[in-house]
Length: 465
Image 1 (cartoon, helix red, strand yellow):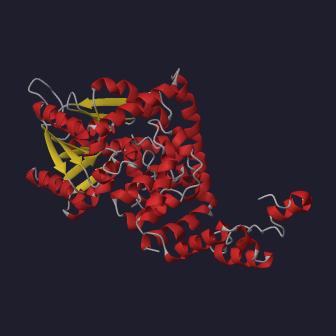
Image 2 (cartoon, helix red, strand yellow):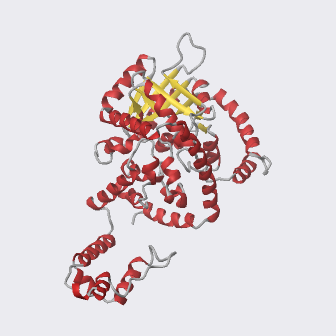
Image 3 (cartoon, helix red, strand yellow):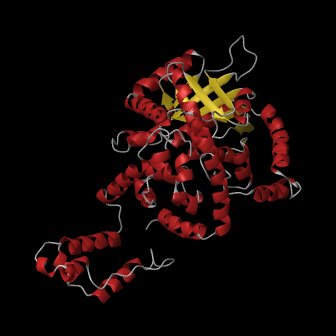
């Protein structure tokens, strides 16, 4: 068992039995669930919308090279610059080079999980550059010295009392401050930062090939300020974010909003096609798009798993997952948590270190059911499990257990030859740490189904059972 697996086991046990933490998550997700039910009423045929979205994403991935080149050509025609980054370190190197060229001291960032993936904040800190999160949830977790807990709701694990106490400790606000008062304080605090920042960094919800545009959606307006105030705007995007046409946004934006936050559509929706033109009064003087691979092509070339790249990062699978709701976001120890994180993280990082995530699932299929682009997540988790065995990443104990179980189950008489008490002793020995530590182990019945059948049907005792 590697260190990541050990962390997962220890942290999941700790969090699962923390009733305070679980109550916070239960409360916050319940609010999301209520909103999503209302949001879905805007659709006369939600299933058809999901099928259309799934088809478009499938087509985009099948012709990814074509659409990426089309995006680059059109974006550069608009005055923007595209940077291709094979690995996270390449993206960081290029972004730091831009920062150095502009003598950057302050960077403002809109909410973007991909910047967490490449750990750009840590890179800025090493260069003595202040990098400030401007999304309220991201600002809260940055202030607390934490990472985002959830891909849509970074501070989901904190109650309003937790946040008030944090702002009391950091800014001496009243410990009884209301969410409205805290939001007002942050608004005023960030306003000055936006005006002084040299660089603004955002992610990209979608990259539009036929116009060479970056589509951004948000609820707070901080994203809009992150690219309109600073002289330089850098958008970081995974190569899988591409969609063919501007016309596709009328499908994807509402789907993302409904499944992400329960809204019909989010408050601020921006389409950015390059830097400020001569006849324009606002916008950045320079705009870059960093197209990041970072092992996404490893997923792309795996035909069984490729579909996972269709993800639009709505977070619906996390909110529906019984495992995520019990063990929380930090237990996964990855940028992307929950069912989608369990599928893609082993490939984005190291399969040998993270394949255990695919085993942390009840396989109930709820994640597949709620996905707006119809990713068969529970089946992909099973494929990862199969690959873990196929590629030799299972432990010796697991292999011996399965081998022994297979040997017994192949022949009925082998199973019957073992006494009832010995079966129960073997079960207790095998599962006392993984199952029996917190739950009552089941007992094997004294008589097997075959024996019961023969007692009830003595005349048919030769029937195969």
